[in-house]
Every structure is written in structure tokens, then in C-alpha cells.
Amino acid sequence: MVEARIACLERLLAGHKISKLSESANVSKLAITSAGGNDANDQAATTIKSVKTTAENEHNRVPLAAGPLARNVQGVPSTYASVIEPVYTPPIPLKGDLDRTTDPRCGDPSPLGIQFCPILAVAKWPYKFVDREYMQPIATAFFDAEKIWNREWDLYYIWSADSSTSNPVTFVTSTQFQALIDDINTAFPDLNWRLTNEHTQKGLLINFTSPHCNLRPRWLGHSNSRERHDLLRDSITQQTKTTTEADPSDILAFQDSIELAFDAARNRPRRLKQSGETTPESIMVKLKAAQIQLDHAYHHLGLSRAAAGTSGTAADPALHQSDVIFISIDIEAYERDHSKVTEVGVSTLDTRDLLQVAMGHGGRDWRKAVRARHFLIHEHKHLVNHAFVRGCPGDFDFGTSESVGLADLPKVLTSCLHHPYSKLDDASLSDEPRKIVIIGHDIGNDIKYCHQIGFSILNRSSIIEVLDTAIMYRAFTKDNDQRSLGTIMLDFDLDAWHLHNAGNDAVYTMWALLGMCCGANLKPEVECDEDLQGSG
Image 1 (cartoon, one colour):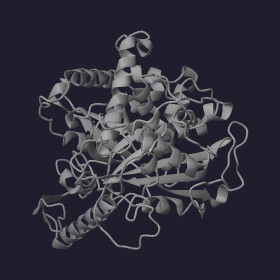
Image 2 (tube, rainbow, N blue to C red):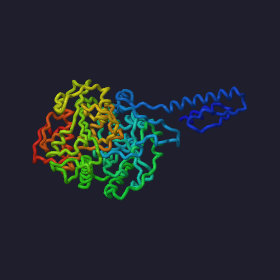
Image 3 (spheres, one colour):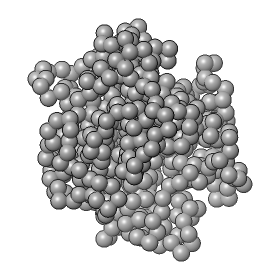
Image 4 (spheres, rainbow, N blue to C red):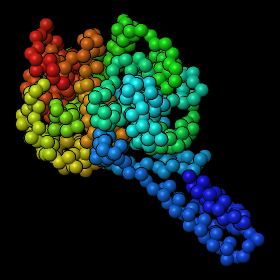
């Protein structure tokens, strides 16, 4: 780094003995003593001072995030796009000079509903999770020579007394890991590698489902080099032991997750449990995680389980402490090329609009408070799905579709997360910070597409939680099988026309949330047609 370059010049200037007069990061004066003449001394000092200034300027330059057309390998397009709102990435500081206090989010617990991958396991991915014939070509193209560390990563960490580990564990989100996999699959089309439940058992993909903040990863910072990662990791201080209100079963599950994370990074993993995914215990763990999400949705809506299903019930101000805005995102991509996003739907439900309003049967009257927007991607209007699902981009049933160019799409979506939160007839100005809960149905795919189009949906301090209606419905029905969005609408006896229109699906996702929390009755033994079975 800076000192190394200066030291190199010092060795080249033989016969000169240099001593620093200042130890600050902006040293501008150097004293040089030598047996030679003063002119030589002055020239040497000027040379070193100039190089140091140049080095520090390069060192402090803010790196630009990779855009949608960035290339990690020659000829290999990257699907990991930059965020629309430029995020300041601090320069790599000198060793021992890291100041994480400049990032106000540092140490904040991650929102519930996000999956994580241990970054050390990610760095070893081609050597542990890929067939031998692909291992070295992939490693050479994407991993070796620090390539894997030089990508843009959002880092989280865990170092808790409950984890019984001597060192912190650092993570990246599964969406960023999936962006890497998309790049690799593009470069090696025959590989077609995918994350599966097996990788959850092996510790490559981890869910932290406890509501207790000490049992979830915390925000660490941005990294684009191995040195940056190590400096951030070395700055972590261990969290104190969790408080007594943490569920003992949550602590045990947390400890198992950390052990799996360490195991995934080992060269020789321990022997894995067999068929853990299908055991009754694993099913109960999934249902418990789903129930946590459903309980949080009750809380955000100002409801209690006892009140759910009572049509005359309004949101209770005494319970309505979270004061959140629900925002549902649904994205449609072209079936022949998933890198081409064709539609984006956004629906919004402000819980302030529900105060003193009776919910109606199954949340019928609260559904009236949902507002929706539908964006058609101008460059991809000619791409309409028909082979696997019946696309209907021209059939938005909750307003007027808006045509948006790819370059403007991230900015438009960002505006949906700020005042007036898609309330287009509201011309008022407000800088009041509001808490946001993101909703989706099988939302992992939608988050991946958001990053793909340059919209970093999770990298925002206003978002406190991510809820998945596909997961929540498991708790609602006490059934571990996942249901499509169309099936849920049919179960609730709701008319859901023109599924697979992104704007409509964003609204139906919000309806599913209200149906579960407001106690909508299920239709018994319904038969679903082919389109409903495949929707969502």
C-alpha cells in the first residue's frame, strides 16, 4: 500500500537517511539527512513527497460499483448491477487505522427473512461444491488471484458468546452469492449450478430465524478486496451473551448454524447428517420459522391472533407500535432469457391508513387501502411469456401501466420507497423517516432480479424486515408444502384475474398477507387449474 511504495523509493535512494516528522495520514513534510549535498537531499524529499501524495490520492479514490454491463471475466457479462443510489465505499485505511464509526449502520441486526452465505465458504465454492471437470476453469476465471475478493460485497458478521467460537464469522447475502452464480452459469452454460436444500445442510446457505437481534448477523460494511475484508473483520468486537428472553431452542438452532458455517469453510468437512431435510424435526423447524414471520405480520398490522377473523376489528393503536409501510415487489422476466426483466409490480399498504378502519371479512375493507403501480420495461415490451405461463403485460387491473426505460427503472423503484410511497395524488413534502417491511411471494427470486436491474433493495436502513407469503402460508395452513400465489387466492376464494402480470401479482401478494392475518376462511378441497398451480 502507501507505506510499501514509499519504502521502495527509500531503498532506491541509496545514501539518504529519511525520517518522518509526522505520523498522520496526510504527512506532507519529510526530513532527509545525508552525507551528500543539499540539492540531492531536496530532490529526494520532493520525489518521495510527490509519490506519497499520488499514492494516497489513488488510495482514497472511491471505487465505482460494477454496473449491469460490467464484466468480471473477458467476454462474460455480469448480472450483479450497481445500486441506483451511489453508496459511498470508504477507502481502505492504513493498517490499524480502520474507523467503522463512519457507517451509522455498522452493528445493526439484519432484517428477518434474509438468507446468508459464509464468505469463506463462498471463496472455496469451486473446490467444494463443483464437479471436478469445472473446478479449475471456474477457479481460474472467477476465484484465483483474489478475483473472488475483488467483487463488491456487502458484509455481515456474527461473533456472539453464544456461538462458542473464538473468531467472528463473516457473511454475504444469498442474493449477492446468486449474482456470482449467475455470472458463472453465463460463462459456463453447461454447468447450470443451483442452490438447493442440500446446501443448507452443508452450511453454504443459512437461515437465521430468531427474532432476537443477538442471534442474527449484523451489518459490517462494504468490501472489494481481501485486505478490506480482513480489516473489517479484525475491527469486530464480540457481542455480549443473549438476554434471558431468547428462546433456548433458538439459541441451539443458532449454534448449529454457526457450526455449519465453520464446517462449510473447512477443507475436510465433518460427516453430515443423512436426509435431515425430511425428518420431522426439520419440518418443525421450518414451520416454526414460518410462524415467526406470520406473528411479525400480526404485530405490524396492530392485530393479535385473537382478533384475527373478527370483521369489525380495526388496527389497535395500542398494538400498532411498529407503524410500518408494507411494500410488495413482484418481477416478471422473459422465460427464454431470465436476464431480461419485462415487468415490475409494486403495491403499498400504509398501516396508518388502517387505524380506526374495520378490516371487514377476511380483510376485505383493508384491501381497499392497497395502492399499486405497474412498470413495463420499454426495451423489452416485445417479449411476452407464453410457453410456460400465460403472460399478460397489458392487463393491469389496478391502475394504468407505466412505460419505463431500463436506465430509469432503478430510480423509479427507489422513489416507491420514499414519500409519498406511490400515493401519486399526494403532492405534500415530507422528510419523516418511515419503517418499511418488504413483502413478496417466494421473494428470493424477486430480490435477485432487483439486484440484476441495478436496484439494491435490501441495502437501505429504512427496511426493517423481509416477509415471504409463501413461507407464511405454511404456518397458516400447518402444511410444509409451498403453494403458488394463484392457489392461495383460490383458497381464500378471492378473484385473481390476469396472474403473471407483475402489478396484479404485487397486489395479490398483499391480499395474501391480509387474508392470513385477518383470518380469511379457506375454501375446502379446491381444484386448481394448470395456470393457478404454476402461478406465483
